[in-house]
Length: 253
Image 1 (cartoon, helix red, strand yellow):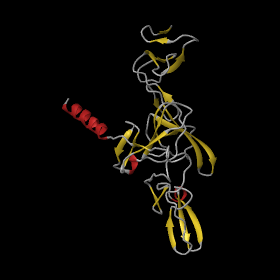
Image 2: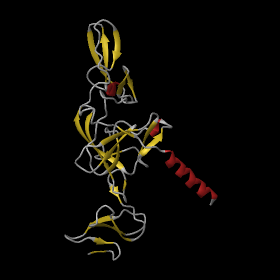
Image 3: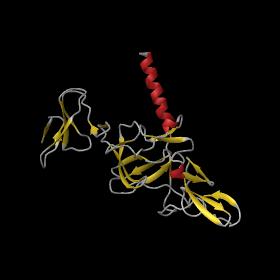
Image 4: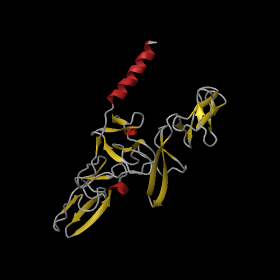
């Protein structure tokens, strides 16, 4: 009993250690990504900066000529240009800001590429509000807050190279994505979350039956789950038109 209480207290302490991120105000920044710096090459020296163009490219000044190096292509773990070098930590300002995601439903969502930012969605078919975790923190999909990064595994990023139709978000049973190839190493990514009472099993969102019987879908009053036995996947059933599922009587009324 003491061990159980201790385990619960440890779990609660981990949740309490999580902190909220800061809203990245885009209203002052515009809608298209620009560079972290407005510096141009001076035409004489040899050095690097983030220059004019993109937050994700290093501008290489080679005397009278200029070249660009894509951070995301050369080092996917450090996709941002920060002070003339590729960095894992983005620095957002009026000249550089994160990309919004296309919202698929209401709620909090991880960023598919950067573990230190996450998104708030008011509903489907809209663009997200972006939040950034404090330095040294990453988004925690279990609590939807920011947790202290302890290991590299804490930084979860989406891997669109997997061959499955729906791509899992790390080991999360809540979030997954659809990656639509748009070119070489380029994807249109839509992030989704399973309904509250379900979990992602690598292929779809499933309801794990707590017992035999019928159970309401929390997010849709017309749908219920038919369960043959505890531990099995429930089968979603839809009430006929104009009827809704009544949890008290276990029938559509």
